[in-house]
Length: 104
Image 1 (tube, rainbow, N blue to C red):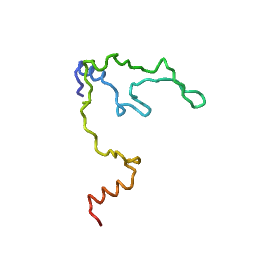
Image 2: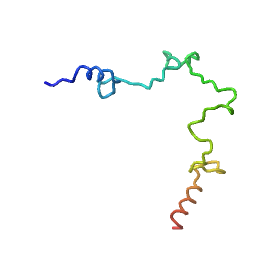
Image 3: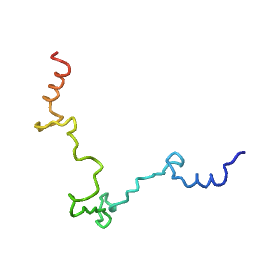
Image 4: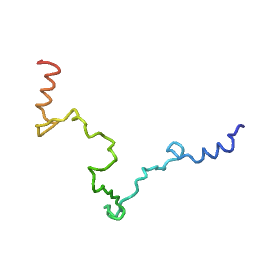
């Protein structure tokens, strides 16, 4: 009965599709592109002319752009310095448990 105006329907048609608007089998992807090809035996061959390379400026210390993350970041929690097993160490777990729960 009621229809949207003509300019509104044109702008709605140009929006990107989502997986909820189409039937089974629609794969949106990430837009990353391929870096090689599949072989008939199940392997993958990298084609090096397709691989993206990023050029670092020659004088990076004098470069004017700043990184997205600060260089003055403090160490994150959960690091186990000095313990070769890191978070998988049982002694670290037991000492932390005793500190939080007491000697039960």
